[in-house]
Length: 61
Ligand SMILES: [Zn+2]
Image (cartoon, rainbow, N blue to C red; front, side, top):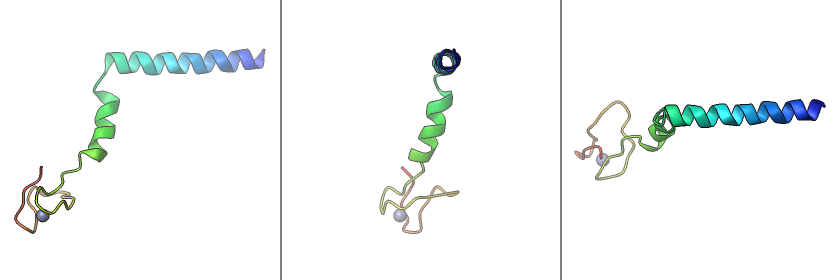
């Protein structure tokens, strides 16, 4: 009985996650993209945090 409740609870959580993703397709991926999309210098590849230009004169991609 308890395992059934847990399985139903997990299924509900998965359903909510799927519905949330369907309603707000940009919400979760945007958070993940933020880390990957950290601006990188086009010349030397250094991470540019807070600035758009690099010390080497390159620009963020
Ligand atoms: Zn650079």
